[in-house]
Length: 248
Length: 325
Ligand SMILES: Nc1ncnc2c1ncn2[C@@H]1O[C@H](COP(=O)(O)OP(=O)(O)O)[C@@H](O)[C@H]1O
Ligand SMILES: [Mg+2]
Image (cartoon, rainbow over all chains, first blue to last red; front, side):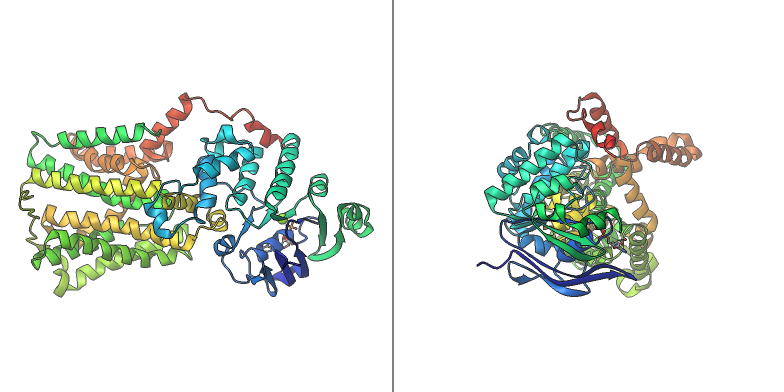
């Protein structure tokens, strides 16, 4: 029995009077794809930000591969093998697709000094091209990220989270605004990556079909609390989930 | 710019810069030399502002620090080759300190912090007479003599400044092409995303200030032997604004922007001199028109024309994103 890749224990976070996340605990095992669903404002993004160092939780602690990560800067956490995407599209629009991807890997290679004096691409062009091809963006390699379609930028955004070979990737609504063909593509790419690299994912998603197909387990959040947890089929049939979504 | 265009452009500029002063009088050569110096200062600010997206209204104060350190040391008998690197180092570390506020404040607030710094340096230079000569400044700094090459004559000094500028530009080229350069641009475009991808945005912000300021210091180290007379008034806020104008007019974030910008800001008033009293008016109007219609500067116009006439791939499905909710 290996330690869970991610372990969240008793995490709470309030904004003024709003208790965005209340005493949430769960674990993510190696190779697992965990879906995190819940109505708007149920605290999913806040929970991500607490895990990822963008926010400091009021209570509780977070361990990655058995190491406490509370108070760690996002860049340090990334170096520990945690990749992420944001709910808002977050690419570097004026940089080429290739540069976006190389940036996502360069800080994991060499030292500060070698990144100044060494190769301009930090020796990553080959690896970056592989990843770009994996996400089927090869024909756009030299384009500015900002000139890509929304769906292509979402793919690039997700791809960046994988460049450093993370053990754990947290994806905040990767399918939001992506069209149907690309959606199937994205899901299939994520599953393939998970299978080939054994990385664990936590995926926040509004698109039920997408997240049910993708995930091996689902956690449902409502008003900052976990209200249900189980395999996708169980969640589909769960009455409290249906109530939460219909707005009880 | 494409892979080949840039080195070609660079070579053409160097050849032009070598030919420019030939057959010219001392005054024109002096103007051309100040174009070089301000290009170096603007190159530094272009790194801080254009590449890394951190506003600074203090570049002239780093020229001041570089100029005064070089002046004091060369007056004390040290060679420029020792005074210059010390000026550069001092500016690097003071610039690093100036970067700290940028970790907390951005935009207008950062502009005010750096503006205050510029004023602070100005006041120190004016009030600490015992060291800086106060309002009277410092005079009589020697021009560097390299044995086989003496820079005492205006034309020789120009070539000396040109050599320094070319080296500074090559180093800058190396920086902006390196992973550091990529991290600077990432900081400008999306600091939170950069941080989440392992970029230590704090360190990169400080470095953007430190390196940019060191270039200001280098420009200052050249000002001292060029004019051989420095006083606080030459490094006031107005001059920081002028350097900012150079960066913006040339094209912030474009490698050659500072050279073009410095040329426009320094040479254009000279060309417009024949209009006598009107030149400032015409000049200001041109700047306003330029900033209103080409916020990416002159180099930006070039890039826009290229994008317009060279077909872009991947535009076809651009509409698709906007159709989805
Ligand atoms: N930075 C913030 N400041 C104040 N309130 C916030 C902030 N971020 C989120 N909230 C509030 O916390 C609650 C949970 O938000 P969020 O985590 O974004 O939900 P979800 O991602 O599930 O839609 C909401 O009520 C939201 O308004
Ligand atoms: Mg959200």
